[in-house]
Length: 434
Ligand SMILES: *Cc1c(COP(=O)(O)O)cnc(C)c1O
Image (cartoon, rainbow, N blue to C red; front, side, top):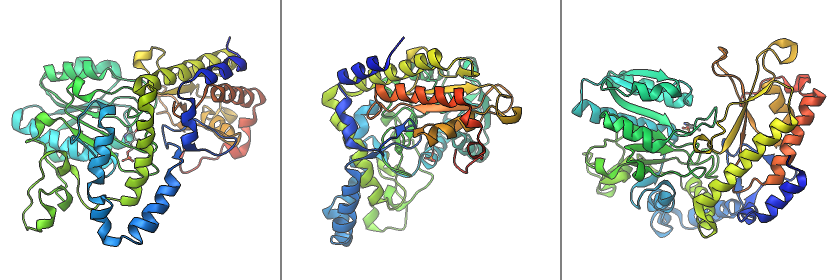
Protein backbone atom coordinates (compact mmCIF):
# COMPACT_ATOMS: atom_id res chain seq x y z
CA UNK A 1 0.00 0.00 0.00
CA UNK A 2 1.34 3.41 -0.95
CA UNK A 3 0.49 6.29 1.38
CA UNK A 4 0.32 10.03 0.81
CA UNK A 5 3.51 10.25 2.87
CA UNK A 6 5.24 7.86 0.47
CA UNK A 7 4.22 10.13 -2.42
CA UNK A 8 5.63 13.19 -0.67
CA UNK A 9 8.90 11.31 -0.16
CA UNK A 10 8.99 10.36 -3.85
CA UNK A 11 8.53 14.03 -4.79
CA UNK A 12 11.30 15.08 -2.42
CA UNK A 13 13.67 12.58 -4.06
CA UNK A 14 12.65 13.44 -7.63
CA UNK A 15 15.61 14.86 -9.62
CA UNK A 16 13.17 16.53 -12.06
CA UNK A 17 11.07 18.20 -9.37
CA UNK A 18 12.40 21.71 -10.00
CA UNK A 19 11.25 21.65 -13.65
CA UNK A 20 7.69 22.21 -12.53
CA UNK A 21 8.65 25.83 -11.84
CA UNK A 22 9.27 26.28 -15.55
CA UNK A 23 5.51 26.07 -16.15
CA UNK A 24 2.53 28.27 -15.32
CA UNK A 25 -0.26 26.09 -13.98
CA UNK A 26 -3.40 27.34 -12.26
CA UNK A 27 -3.62 27.01 -8.48
CA UNK A 28 -5.57 24.00 -7.32
CA UNK A 29 -5.39 22.17 -10.64
CA UNK A 30 -3.92 18.71 -11.12
CA UNK A 31 -3.22 18.65 -14.82
CA UNK A 32 -3.38 15.18 -16.34
CA UNK A 33 -4.13 16.25 -19.91
CA UNK A 34 -0.69 17.28 -21.11
CA UNK A 35 -1.07 14.52 -23.71
CA UNK A 36 -3.80 16.62 -25.31
CA UNK A 37 -2.60 20.17 -24.69
CA UNK A 38 0.65 20.65 -22.80
CA UNK A 39 1.00 23.29 -20.07
CA UNK A 40 2.25 26.80 -20.74
CA UNK A 41 6.00 27.25 -20.22
CA UNK A 42 6.62 30.14 -17.83
CA UNK A 43 8.80 31.85 -20.45
CA UNK A 44 6.03 31.83 -23.07
CA UNK A 45 4.14 34.99 -22.08
CA UNK A 46 7.26 37.18 -22.06
CA UNK A 47 8.42 35.64 -25.31
CA UNK A 48 5.12 36.47 -27.02
CA UNK A 49 5.40 40.05 -25.78
CA UNK A 50 8.98 40.28 -27.07
CA UNK A 51 8.11 38.90 -30.49
CA UNK A 52 5.04 41.12 -30.86
CA UNK A 53 6.43 44.31 -29.35
CA UNK A 54 10.04 44.12 -30.52
CA UNK A 55 10.57 41.75 -33.42
CA UNK A 56 7.28 42.55 -35.13
CA UNK A 57 6.32 46.07 -34.00
CA UNK A 58 9.84 47.52 -34.12
CA UNK A 59 11.72 45.18 -36.41
CA UNK A 60 8.92 44.83 -38.93
CA UNK A 61 9.96 43.07 -42.16
CA UNK A 62 13.63 43.33 -41.13
CA UNK A 63 13.05 40.63 -38.50
CA UNK A 64 12.95 37.90 -41.13
CA UNK A 65 16.71 38.44 -41.24
CA UNK A 66 17.59 40.29 -38.03
CA UNK A 67 15.56 38.12 -35.63
CA UNK A 68 16.34 34.94 -37.56
CA UNK A 69 12.69 34.26 -38.38
CA UNK A 70 13.55 32.76 -41.75
CA UNK A 71 15.50 29.86 -40.24
CA UNK A 72 13.36 29.26 -37.15
CA UNK A 73 11.62 26.09 -38.44
CA UNK A 74 15.05 24.55 -39.10
CA UNK A 75 16.66 25.81 -35.88
CA UNK A 76 13.86 24.35 -33.79
CA UNK A 77 14.24 21.11 -35.71
CA UNK A 78 17.95 21.03 -34.94
CA UNK A 79 17.29 21.79 -31.28
CA UNK A 80 14.88 18.89 -30.85
CA UNK A 81 16.49 16.41 -33.28
CA UNK A 82 18.56 14.52 -30.64
CA UNK A 83 15.37 13.68 -28.71
CA UNK A 84 14.17 11.68 -31.71
CA UNK A 85 17.55 10.13 -32.48
CA UNK A 86 18.06 12.14 -35.66
CA UNK A 87 20.70 14.57 -36.82
CA UNK A 88 20.80 18.33 -37.33
CA UNK A 89 19.32 19.37 -40.68
CA UNK A 90 16.94 16.40 -40.74
CA UNK A 91 13.92 17.78 -38.88
CA UNK A 92 11.73 20.87 -39.31
CA UNK A 93 8.77 22.24 -37.41
CA UNK A 94 6.07 23.34 -39.83
CA UNK A 95 2.34 23.02 -40.56
CA UNK A 96 0.19 20.58 -38.59
CA UNK A 97 0.57 16.88 -37.89
CA UNK A 98 -2.29 16.15 -40.29
CA UNK A 99 -0.70 18.18 -43.10
CA UNK A 100 2.74 16.69 -42.50
CA UNK A 101 1.22 13.23 -42.58
CA UNK A 102 -0.30 14.04 -45.95
CA UNK A 103 3.13 15.08 -47.25
CA UNK A 104 5.00 12.00 -46.08
CA UNK A 105 2.28 9.51 -47.00
CA UNK A 106 2.18 11.00 -50.48
CA UNK A 107 5.96 10.72 -50.72
CA UNK A 108 5.83 7.12 -49.52
CA UNK A 109 3.04 6.31 -51.98
CA UNK A 110 5.12 7.76 -54.82
CA UNK A 111 8.21 5.78 -53.85
CA UNK A 112 6.14 2.61 -53.59
CA UNK A 113 4.53 3.27 -56.97
CA UNK A 114 7.98 3.59 -58.55
CA UNK A 115 9.59 0.64 -56.81
CA UNK A 116 6.75 -1.81 -56.40
CA UNK A 117 3.62 -0.81 -58.35
CA UNK A 118 2.02 -4.19 -57.65
CA UNK A 119 1.79 -3.39 -53.92
CA UNK A 120 -1.67 -1.93 -53.35
CA UNK A 121 -2.18 -1.82 -49.59
CA UNK A 122 -1.63 0.78 -46.93
CA UNK A 123 -2.03 -0.83 -43.51
CA UNK A 124 -2.75 0.88 -40.21
CA UNK A 125 -4.49 0.36 -36.90
CA UNK A 126 -8.28 0.56 -36.62
CA UNK A 127 -7.94 2.58 -33.42
CA UNK A 128 -5.38 4.96 -34.87
CA UNK A 129 -6.17 8.63 -34.33
CA UNK A 130 -8.97 9.49 -36.81
CA UNK A 131 -7.14 12.29 -38.64
CA UNK A 132 -4.41 9.79 -39.55
CA UNK A 133 -6.99 7.48 -41.07
CA UNK A 134 -8.81 10.31 -42.84
CA UNK A 135 -5.58 11.57 -44.41
CA UNK A 136 -4.64 8.01 -45.37
CA UNK A 137 -8.03 7.61 -47.04
CA UNK A 138 -7.44 10.54 -49.37
CA UNK A 139 -3.87 9.45 -50.18
CA UNK A 140 -5.18 5.96 -50.93
CA UNK A 141 -7.78 7.42 -53.26
CA UNK A 142 -5.19 9.47 -55.10
CA UNK A 143 -2.72 6.60 -55.45
CA UNK A 144 -5.07 3.69 -56.00
CA UNK A 145 -4.22 2.01 -52.70
CA UNK A 146 -6.49 0.11 -50.36
CA UNK A 147 -6.51 1.14 -46.69
CA UNK A 148 -6.51 -1.98 -44.51
CA UNK A 149 -7.26 -1.42 -40.82
CA UNK A 150 -6.06 -3.92 -38.25
CA UNK A 151 -6.01 -4.64 -34.55
CA UNK A 152 -2.49 -4.31 -33.10
CA UNK A 153 -2.01 -8.06 -32.73
CA UNK A 154 -2.85 -8.57 -36.44
CA UNK A 155 -0.10 -6.28 -37.75
CA UNK A 156 2.82 -8.71 -37.70
CA UNK A 157 0.86 -11.22 -39.79
CA UNK A 158 -0.32 -8.56 -42.24
CA UNK A 159 3.18 -7.51 -43.39
CA UNK A 160 3.05 -9.19 -46.78
CA UNK A 161 4.34 -8.34 -50.24
CA UNK A 162 0.96 -6.85 -51.10
CA UNK A 163 1.61 -3.99 -48.69
CA UNK A 164 3.22 -0.74 -49.83
CA UNK A 165 3.09 1.31 -46.63
CA UNK A 166 2.71 0.59 -42.93
CA UNK A 167 1.48 3.72 -41.12
CA UNK A 168 1.38 3.46 -37.35
CA UNK A 169 1.11 5.73 -34.37
CA UNK A 170 3.88 4.73 -31.98
CA UNK A 171 1.80 5.30 -28.82
CA UNK A 172 -1.93 4.78 -29.24
CA UNK A 173 -4.00 7.81 -28.19
CA UNK A 174 -6.85 5.70 -26.79
CA UNK A 175 -4.95 3.09 -24.84
CA UNK A 176 -1.42 4.39 -24.32
CA UNK A 177 -0.12 1.12 -25.80
CA UNK A 178 3.28 1.49 -27.48
CA UNK A 179 4.60 -0.38 -30.50
CA UNK A 180 8.16 -1.68 -30.64
CA UNK A 181 9.25 0.73 -33.36
CA UNK A 182 12.52 -1.00 -34.18
CA UNK A 183 10.97 -4.48 -34.38
CA UNK A 184 7.94 -3.44 -36.46
CA UNK A 185 10.09 -1.35 -38.81
CA UNK A 186 12.58 -4.18 -39.31
CA UNK A 187 9.81 -6.72 -39.95
CA UNK A 188 8.06 -4.40 -42.41
CA UNK A 189 11.22 -3.40 -44.27
CA UNK A 190 12.20 -7.07 -44.46
CA UNK A 191 9.10 -7.38 -46.64
CA UNK A 192 9.90 -4.26 -48.66
CA UNK A 193 7.29 -2.10 -46.88
CA UNK A 194 7.83 1.61 -46.14
CA UNK A 195 7.25 2.63 -42.51
CA UNK A 196 5.63 5.92 -41.53
CA UNK A 197 5.48 6.68 -37.79
CA UNK A 198 3.24 9.17 -36.04
CA UNK A 199 4.95 10.36 -32.85
CA UNK A 200 2.22 12.66 -31.50
CA UNK A 201 2.07 10.78 -28.19
CA UNK A 202 5.76 9.88 -28.15
CA UNK A 203 7.79 13.03 -28.74
CA UNK A 204 9.07 14.25 -25.40
CA UNK A 205 7.25 11.43 -23.60
CA UNK A 206 9.08 8.19 -24.41
CA UNK A 207 12.49 7.31 -25.88
CA UNK A 208 12.45 7.51 -29.68
CA UNK A 209 15.33 6.53 -31.94
CA UNK A 210 14.22 7.00 -35.54
CA UNK A 211 17.67 6.45 -37.02
CA UNK A 212 18.31 3.42 -34.82
CA UNK A 213 15.00 1.95 -35.98
CA UNK A 214 15.81 2.96 -39.58
CA UNK A 215 12.28 4.37 -39.99
CA UNK A 216 11.37 5.91 -43.33
CA UNK A 217 9.25 8.90 -42.32
CA UNK A 218 7.97 10.40 -39.08
CA UNK A 219 5.70 13.24 -38.05
CA UNK A 220 4.31 14.48 -34.75
CA UNK A 221 2.63 17.44 -33.13
CA UNK A 222 4.24 19.76 -30.62
CA UNK A 223 1.33 20.97 -28.48
CA UNK A 224 1.13 17.76 -26.41
CA UNK A 225 4.21 16.66 -24.47
CA UNK A 226 6.38 19.36 -26.09
CA UNK A 227 4.25 22.14 -24.58
CA UNK A 228 4.46 24.25 -27.74
CA UNK A 229 1.05 25.92 -27.35
CA UNK A 230 -2.37 25.34 -28.95
CA UNK A 231 -1.98 24.69 -32.67
CA UNK A 232 1.83 24.93 -32.52
CA UNK A 233 3.66 23.73 -35.61
CA UNK A 234 4.24 20.00 -35.92
CA UNK A 235 7.49 18.33 -36.96
CA UNK A 236 8.34 16.21 -39.96
CA UNK A 237 11.31 13.95 -40.66
CA UNK A 238 12.39 11.87 -43.64
CA UNK A 239 15.24 9.42 -43.46
CA UNK A 240 18.24 11.04 -45.23
CA UNK A 241 18.72 7.86 -47.28
CA UNK A 242 15.52 8.92 -49.10
CA UNK A 243 16.92 12.38 -49.72
CA UNK A 244 16.52 12.37 -53.48
CA UNK A 245 13.22 10.56 -53.44
CA UNK A 246 10.85 12.22 -51.09
CA UNK A 247 8.39 14.39 -52.83
CA UNK A 248 6.59 17.46 -51.48
CA UNK A 249 3.03 17.49 -52.80
CA UNK A 250 2.45 21.01 -51.43
CA UNK A 251 5.14 22.64 -53.53
CA UNK A 252 5.13 26.11 -52.02
CA UNK A 253 7.84 28.72 -52.19
CA UNK A 254 9.30 28.12 -48.70
CA UNK A 255 10.26 24.63 -49.85
CA UNK A 256 11.91 25.97 -52.99
CA UNK A 257 15.68 25.71 -53.36
CA UNK A 258 15.93 29.49 -53.79
CA UNK A 259 12.68 31.15 -52.69
CA UNK A 260 14.00 34.68 -53.09
CA UNK A 261 15.07 34.17 -56.69
CA UNK A 262 11.33 34.35 -57.50
CA UNK A 263 11.70 32.09 -60.52
CA UNK A 264 8.52 30.73 -62.13
CA UNK A 265 9.54 27.05 -61.89
CA UNK A 266 9.51 24.96 -58.74
CA UNK A 267 12.81 23.39 -57.75
CA UNK A 268 12.63 21.70 -54.36
CA UNK A 269 15.22 22.49 -51.72
CA UNK A 270 17.54 19.64 -50.84
CA UNK A 271 16.66 17.86 -47.67
CA UNK A 272 13.88 18.35 -45.18
CA UNK A 273 13.51 22.07 -45.89
CA UNK A 274 11.38 21.14 -48.89
CA UNK A 275 8.64 20.14 -46.48
CA UNK A 276 8.04 23.78 -45.67
CA UNK A 277 5.24 25.12 -47.82
CA UNK A 278 4.47 28.79 -47.25
CA UNK A 279 5.21 31.55 -44.75
CA UNK A 280 5.59 30.16 -41.23
CA UNK A 281 3.82 31.45 -38.06
CA UNK A 282 6.56 33.30 -36.19
CA UNK A 283 4.67 34.15 -33.00
CA UNK A 284 3.61 30.56 -32.58
CA UNK A 285 7.02 29.10 -33.47
CA UNK A 286 8.68 31.45 -30.98
CA UNK A 287 6.40 30.17 -28.21
CA UNK A 288 7.11 26.61 -29.26
CA UNK A 289 10.78 27.31 -28.65
CA UNK A 290 9.97 27.99 -24.97
CA UNK A 291 8.58 24.45 -24.78
CA UNK A 292 11.65 22.96 -26.46
CA UNK A 293 13.96 24.98 -24.19
CA UNK A 294 12.56 23.05 -21.21
CA UNK A 295 13.84 19.86 -22.83
CA UNK A 296 17.25 21.42 -23.23
CA UNK A 297 17.13 22.07 -19.46
CA UNK A 298 16.37 18.37 -18.86
CA UNK A 299 19.58 17.23 -20.55
CA UNK A 300 21.89 17.89 -17.57
CA UNK A 301 19.30 16.26 -15.29
CA UNK A 302 19.44 12.93 -17.07
CA UNK A 303 17.62 13.59 -20.34
CA UNK A 304 15.08 11.16 -21.69
CA UNK A 305 16.16 8.36 -19.38
CA UNK A 306 15.27 10.47 -16.34
CA UNK A 307 11.96 11.54 -17.92
CA UNK A 308 11.08 7.98 -18.81
CA UNK A 309 11.91 6.64 -15.36
CA UNK A 310 9.69 9.24 -13.75
CA UNK A 311 6.90 8.74 -16.27
CA UNK A 312 6.82 4.99 -15.59
CA UNK A 313 6.93 5.56 -11.83
CA UNK A 314 3.98 7.98 -12.10
CA UNK A 315 1.88 5.67 -14.26
CA UNK A 316 2.77 2.62 -12.12
CA UNK A 317 1.68 4.55 -9.03
CA UNK A 318 -1.57 5.71 -10.64
CA UNK A 319 -2.47 2.17 -11.71
CA UNK A 320 -1.64 0.75 -8.27
CA UNK A 321 -3.63 3.41 -6.40
CA UNK A 322 -6.69 3.08 -8.66
CA UNK A 323 -6.64 -0.67 -8.16
CA UNK A 324 -6.23 -0.33 -4.39
CA UNK A 325 -8.72 2.45 -3.79
CA UNK A 326 -11.34 2.53 -6.56
CA UNK A 327 -12.56 -1.04 -6.69
CA UNK A 328 -16.18 -2.00 -7.31
CA UNK A 329 -17.04 0.75 -9.77
CA UNK A 330 -16.66 -1.05 -13.10
CA UNK A 331 -13.26 0.40 -13.98
CA UNK A 332 -10.75 -1.56 -16.04
CA UNK A 333 -7.26 -0.90 -17.35
CA UNK A 334 -6.77 -0.32 -21.10
CA UNK A 335 -3.08 0.56 -20.84
CA UNK A 336 -0.46 -2.21 -20.87
CA UNK A 337 1.17 -2.99 -17.51
CA UNK A 338 4.38 -3.99 -19.25
CA UNK A 339 6.76 -1.01 -19.22
CA UNK A 340 8.07 -1.68 -22.72
CA UNK A 341 4.56 -1.37 -24.12
CA UNK A 342 3.34 1.68 -22.20
CA UNK A 343 3.43 5.33 -23.22
CA UNK A 344 3.08 8.16 -20.70
CA UNK A 345 -0.66 7.91 -20.07
CA UNK A 346 -3.07 5.62 -18.26
CA UNK A 347 -6.44 4.85 -19.76
CA UNK A 348 -9.24 3.38 -17.70
CA UNK A 349 -12.24 1.71 -19.27
CA UNK A 350 -15.73 1.63 -17.84
CA UNK A 351 -18.37 -0.93 -18.65
CA UNK A 352 -21.33 0.11 -20.79
CA UNK A 353 -24.63 0.28 -18.91
CA UNK A 354 -23.17 1.74 -15.71
CA UNK A 355 -24.04 5.34 -16.64
CA UNK A 356 -27.09 7.32 -15.53
CA UNK A 357 -30.24 5.32 -16.38
CA UNK A 358 -28.00 2.55 -17.73
CA UNK A 359 -27.63 4.55 -20.96
CA UNK A 360 -23.88 4.67 -21.37
CA UNK A 361 -20.72 3.90 -19.39
CA UNK A 362 -20.77 7.06 -17.27
CA UNK A 363 -17.09 7.59 -18.16
CA UNK A 364 -17.75 11.01 -19.65
CA UNK A 365 -19.62 12.19 -16.56
CA UNK A 366 -16.92 10.89 -14.21
CA UNK A 367 -14.30 12.86 -16.14
CA UNK A 368 -16.50 15.98 -15.96
CA UNK A 369 -16.95 15.58 -12.21
CA UNK A 370 -13.17 15.26 -11.83
CA UNK A 371 -12.61 18.39 -13.92
CA UNK A 372 -15.04 20.28 -11.66
CA UNK A 373 -12.77 19.26 -8.75
CA UNK A 374 -9.69 20.54 -10.62
CA UNK A 375 -8.42 17.15 -11.77
CA UNK A 376 -8.19 17.55 -15.54
CA UNK A 377 -8.12 14.43 -17.68
CA UNK A 378 -10.25 13.67 -20.70
CA UNK A 379 -12.72 11.24 -22.20
CA UNK A 380 -12.50 9.29 -25.43
CA UNK A 381 -15.61 7.65 -26.77
CA UNK A 382 -15.71 3.93 -27.48
CA UNK A 383 -16.95 2.45 -30.74
CA UNK A 384 -20.11 1.03 -29.15
CA UNK A 385 -19.17 -2.55 -30.12
CA UNK A 386 -17.42 -3.40 -26.87
CA UNK A 387 -14.14 -3.87 -28.75
CA UNK A 388 -13.03 -0.29 -28.04
CA UNK A 389 -14.67 0.81 -24.81
CA UNK A 390 -15.29 4.31 -23.44
CA UNK A 391 -12.08 5.61 -21.93
CA UNK A 392 -11.12 7.90 -19.05
CA UNK A 393 -7.71 9.15 -20.12
CA UNK A 394 -5.00 10.52 -17.85
CA UNK A 395 -1.72 11.84 -19.22
CA UNK A 396 1.37 12.10 -17.03
CA UNK A 397 3.88 14.68 -18.16
CA UNK A 398 6.93 14.05 -15.96
CA UNK A 399 8.10 17.65 -16.43
CA UNK A 400 5.34 19.03 -14.21
CA UNK A 401 3.27 16.21 -12.68
CA UNK A 402 4.38 14.97 -9.26
CA UNK A 403 3.69 11.92 -7.13
CA UNK A 404 1.54 13.88 -4.68
CA UNK A 405 -0.61 14.94 -7.66
CA UNK A 406 -1.16 11.28 -8.48
CA UNK A 407 -2.25 10.58 -4.91
CA UNK A 408 -4.78 13.41 -4.88
CA UNK A 409 -6.07 12.62 -8.37
CA UNK A 410 -6.91 9.07 -7.33
CA UNK A 411 -8.44 10.27 -4.07
CA UNK A 412 -10.71 12.62 -6.05
CA UNK A 413 -11.62 9.77 -8.39
CA UNK A 414 -12.47 7.58 -5.39
CA UNK A 415 -14.68 10.29 -3.90
CA UNK A 416 -16.42 11.00 -7.22
CA UNK A 417 -17.23 7.31 -7.60
CA UNK A 418 -18.23 6.67 -3.96
CA UNK A 419 -20.43 9.77 -3.68
CA UNK A 420 -22.05 9.27 -7.09
CA UNK A 421 -21.67 13.01 -7.72
CA UNK A 422 -20.87 12.26 -11.36
CA UNK A 423 -24.59 11.46 -11.81
CA UNK A 424 -25.49 15.17 -11.60
CA UNK A 425 -27.08 16.46 -14.84
CA UNK A 426 -24.40 19.11 -15.39
CA UNK A 427 -21.75 16.39 -15.67
CA UNK A 428 -23.81 14.45 -18.19
CA UNK A 429 -24.16 17.19 -20.81
CA UNK A 430 -21.73 16.56 -23.68
CA UNK A 431 -19.46 19.50 -24.63
CA UNK A 432 -18.15 20.20 -28.13
CA UNK A 433 -14.59 19.25 -27.11
CA UNK A 434 -14.28 16.19 -24.91
C1 LIG B 1 -3.02 14.71 -31.57
C2 LIG B 1 -2.85 13.84 -32.74
C3 LIG B 1 -2.96 14.35 -34.03
C4 LIG B 1 -3.35 15.78 -34.24
O1 LIG B 1 -3.23 16.22 -35.54
P1 LIG B 1 -3.35 17.80 -35.82
O2 LIG B 1 -3.10 17.93 -37.24
O3 LIG B 1 -2.35 18.47 -34.94
O4 LIG B 1 -4.72 18.21 -35.42
C5 LIG B 1 -2.73 13.49 -35.10
N1 LIG B 1 -2.41 12.20 -34.88
C6 LIG B 1 -2.31 11.68 -33.65
C7 LIG B 1 -1.94 10.25 -33.45
C8 LIG B 1 -2.52 12.48 -32.55
O5 LIG B 1 -2.44 11.97 -31.32
